[in-house]
Length: 236
Image (cartoon, rainbow, N blue to C red; front, side, top):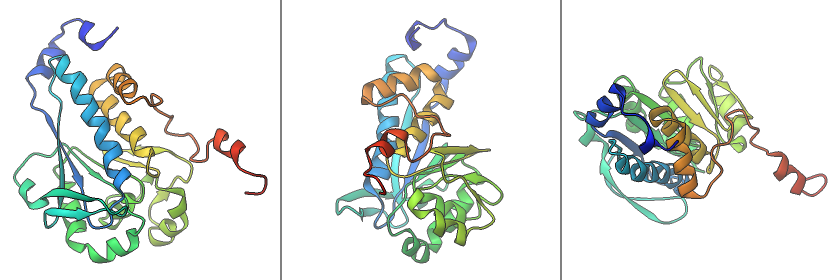
């Protein structure tokens, strides 16, 4: 049964009257481009299905501390708004992409870390993709929680944040109102899980079909998939 074939319930009537959910994607110099855009595309695709069903979708913003153009690690430039513009605006979700230079980013971004800490008190949920988990941890939002990050960064993360339980194998992890994911393309799995939590399994499946991706890998699937391991040369 598709979403537009569902019976008209009071819950759906209330949903139709709700405002769109505001999602802020946090940008900073040397951000990973796919960490940002892969998750964004999931919500962009979800908007198509939600509008077709007469349901409110998502309002997506990419924002940085200074606003304006932000260079990505890959060399492309992303245009952003200032994070300060959202001080008095209700934010549903904050998503923090990662960077291959995350340790330098942490050293250079105390104001961003402070913004994450303050905003976490009012946003419905906080999420990270790849090494964006480092910034949530630096803000003190992950203490005592189980989290995921890119497997390449696992040793560094455990040294820097011993108070956080790192799940080295998980594709993504939800703990309370905090969601974290493994590297790069795992941001798609994370975003599909967020859409499912908001809009149901059928909508998440519609998004996956629209994007021509696997519906969603289980959150406890190893970051090293059996298929990938079978393709590696012996001893690699």
